[in-house]
Image 1: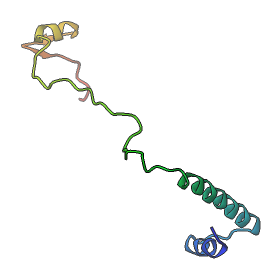
Image 2: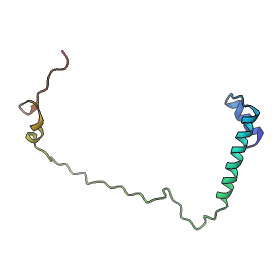
Image 3: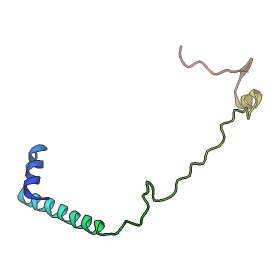
Image 4: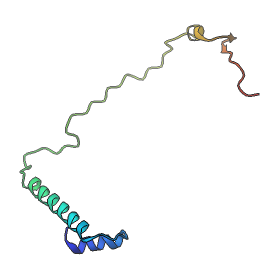
Length: 93
């Protein structure tokens, strides 16, 4: 990142950076540009394009409607029932 770009970003974001901060930021982005140059130097022409590094498998079950429990089984843990409904204490008066 050059000084002019940093100055424009400083104005755009309404920042006031010290000279030390400006040096730190430009040094940081210079390192990132060198890293990017190293990555761009790698020959990837024989590499197949990928969206994910690892293959993704979605494991899902068949969507089959079923009734695994009976009403009686489900109401075993209820404190009180009446005609297939759970009876619970009144909370709002």
